[in-house]
Length: 218
Length: 323
View 1: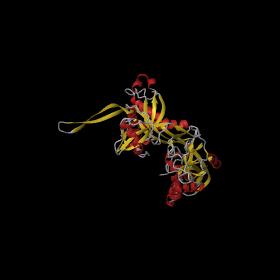
View 2: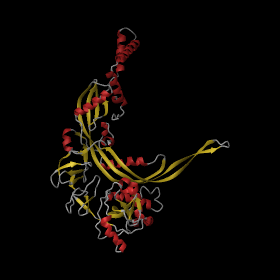
View 3: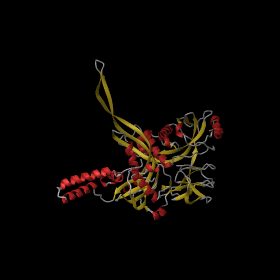
View 4: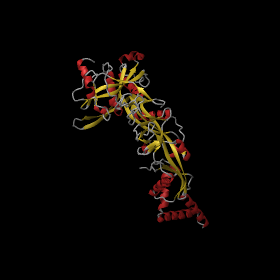
């Protein structure tokens, strides 16, 4: 067993910690770290923000929800692969409300959006409750429901889903009333998904970047 | 949890580390840096922060016996054992499909307006169900049944944990070896939970369930094994070493029934007195029972009840006196 000091390997700032957390975000340089499997230090988890396609409504809180973007090798599934999304997006918060999380993951994955990287934006990266390997398990659950006419009952326990890698992205969302509305496809989910999750309101810091959406420079 | 983490210093400033709610985390009181205990290929092991000593175990047994009206306790020997348990926490997620029998009760109305029951309609419906449930189980890592324990989930609820110092404890007590591998414990936890998600009366069940967010750790649980005599009867009692409650007890040799002894004594007396042995036994046995009843010996009667209810091997059901 190894004792690991939670300090940013890049800038030496102490990493904010919480129970059950396995990804740590540096408050100074915004890098995300995870303990290496062998326990001999921290490794960086690459992540980037996703560009919104719409502005939040006035007065809404703007939060960046961490989302695992999981690749599905649909070409390996033959005919049924044609109805599958090649990317499954699993929110990395709200694990205690797993059904809501899976519902949002399903909607996010089905949405006909092509998220692009939000370049030049200093959005604050939030902590993720889910590790990559857990995101793969949830992605498989989401994909099964996407299959054309559902796999046959006999196939269900054994059908192999060719799940690829998982990449962490920050998805811009607006919180208003009892709803969380994601700002890429305009989908909404009940606010209970993020209840109890510490997500900073970034409306002020991102206001300038949102202005660029209107001016069409995005 | 305010106790100091034993012997561990901050890797950045050398300050004393303090424990946190999560036993895998430690915090420096000086520079406020958090520390994570990373297991790598090893498994993190924990134990209750406080355990009772021999005297407290003796007292716990004595109080339990007193509550049953039994006295005359003498402790011959006491040994502390640390029993390993796998603690598995996870989310069980996936799909299940099954057929369920739906019963529809019907009534028909007669010409007079009275309602009479008609034959119940039964048909099968196919159900598709999303499963998303918590898994939080403890499973024995050794043969814990010898100590009367199967799982310790209930016992852990009110207990603070600390890292388990294996070598130090092994010098002072028996530390049982882990004989159930982690993979087997995970498999068992998954099987237990999966078995619980299938609805009643479901047929043609097909499941695709996986464990996500799996956390496994070892928890060493203390149990005192006391060799005692209770009113002259030798017995072995296991006492929960964290919560000071009696887990179970058993007599260590067959105790001849007092009634049989009385009948044998009465028969001998009758034969010596020249009376037919059966009649003598009957009379003297009745007298003995009457005397015992009249004397109202709470201790003996209580012991008999305690033995028969909790210690007697012929009724060796597991007991839980916590309630």
